[in-house]
Length: 412
View (tube, rainbow, N blue to C red):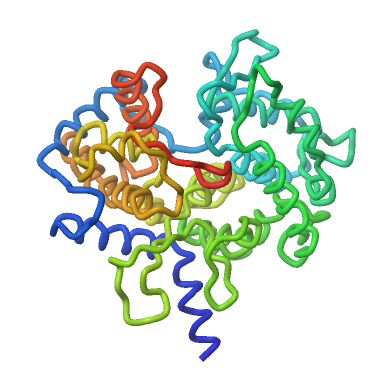
């Protein structure tokens, strides 16, 4: 029975579970069964047009790359990581891939909401960069300077033992945090990197196959699963969730399996132990999207990219609230701050995932594209995230999301 229970728990650590349960939440909402939101699909066409507008502006040829951390390392048209990586000498493609896994994993784990006030002053341009892009450039600078490496002559790596003992002061300084430049959740981010280091050090069988233990060792673990040089994108997510899952702070567990970004909602009914669980895995999917390109550069073919889902975060979610596809039953909820595990936030995030699938179909229909020629990862990039940010700034001067979520720096 324990084995069956563990299997049920691990079934929640998959993109398929995220998509299926988000779809159920949407069905319940369309039937009027949710406590916080009503849904108006009649407004989806306007959302698709808004997404197309920002996509065409950013990518006039409609050749849209994947939504991934790598986009945020491009500043003023210069791809900073590519410039560094192309100038470095790598013994083989796998060595570069391990470094890129190190960078992506650390950078994504540092990428929860920064808050509206924080800015990172870029040494090259002198400009102050906020939010996700600022966090990205800051994390790239940390990585390139060797902050996470134990070997001063090899800066482009993150060593497990260095991460495990990372001082809060090091991140405080690297993020340029001060009373005048506050960053949300700095302690939470530091703790997450330390937990990552400890886990990786303990799991040399996964993270130390061809090097001393480092997060980038996950590349070798995933590469070993390739069949005929091909790896399915959902398998990347499964590896991320199953191997990195224990680093997340105390969240739900089932049969001793930590469930990560997974929450409860009583409307979701199943006939097994997973009843009421709503998996979303936002940061893990964002990371999985960001691991596709290093794997491709290392020579692997990545299949079923649409097997991953849209991301349950506040730009995509805000897109549907601001366009009034999702309407609050109680307007006063727009003024309140909501805990991440509140039913309102769980509903909002699950509905976002399901609506992104619907939206992708609409966008493709307007462009005469297919999932192969315009995958969801490209629609997110084009796309929904930018359109969510654009309407947020048009509605609210500070560009804040339409709903306030109390974040601990480890969810989104």
